Length: 501
Image (cartoon, rainbow, N blue to C red):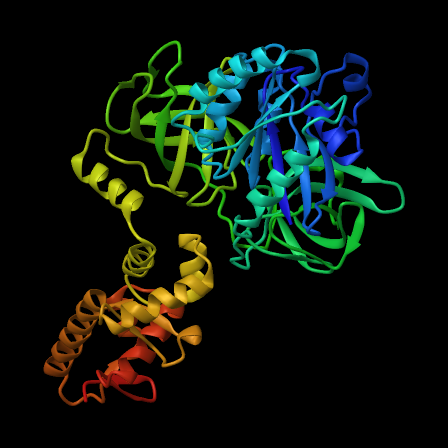
């Protein structure tokens, strides 16, 4: 299943097109029907001729409601940039296109609507303008479809184009850690609290205990629906309505994330490789206040520029963003920053829980650049290396935001290259340490034990707790370290004492 999101200027026919494609009216608010304008997110769905089910998200096009657009567009598989042939390119056409670029939406198509209202000569003029507009963007190689929602002209060709594009689209990854960024929360009589969103990174199951982040409230899934059909399991890449117990819908706000307990550590500061849009009115300044959008979250934040005191339009730089309250964000997510109803820029999150950095420091910039350019193997290696001691696959996945199957493949390569050690021949059940950290640990333990034996030659050995204190590590990690030291015949354990072989 895939999720398609619309984008484009107000009154360019997004809602009418979805209505024609699905037979459903995505506008759900009476005010939207009265004003003839989408204000908040709307939803519909359809099944293609090849039986592929798709969800469609209708976003508002008015500049006052770009924040609502951002709440729905962050988890889509394909974007439809919709432009009216009557009006051609308009301000929110440009802003929505810029946002899709910032969010790194991988696939898209351009749909020119209201073809019944213009002649063929005008169609060709608008197409030429649009081709120039999308050059150098995620839509550069996209097909352009001309349709009329009123007459139905071009609709079959559009549906075929959607089917063809999705046939080459990879299904959403599953790292066994579901995230449902919540865009709606309401109550249903007889059922209780319901939250909706687009599911990413894992599956949801009826009966599971979950957590709302960043609030930390524990809830349980009572029921799941996709396209108004009850399901026992919801899969990544689907629009989901989850009936949950343990919380009132009034206590849940847009921007919270439904996820597994004790996984996401809400971020108080994160590092981002920031791209600034070409059309911003003024340079961005260090420590300026911005509005952060990530997933369905919207929160006031402080922008800390790490390389300079200001940055001009069209430039890129490293920055740290500090939201006024913690946000549920992971490495690999994309974010957008705005101010005074103007989109300023956005970029890739490379560290979700970052320490405060020294500004204008070449070492800091070099380290951040390495995070941006590293291969998957390098990321896995660096995650193990930064743990200092032993770390398991689950923890590597949680820190790196890489699916477990990929991690296992990279671990096998790293072991063959003798860059890491494992505590077992069974990779899935092993813990890992880099060779450099192992050598440092080995030398440190040998030094401590040798000195103790020299100072107290008549004693059985070093008390276990004494060695742990000398290494300055937790009991859990210490037990893992002892396991590896025993496997490698570095130590001999006798009761509560440790000695060299």
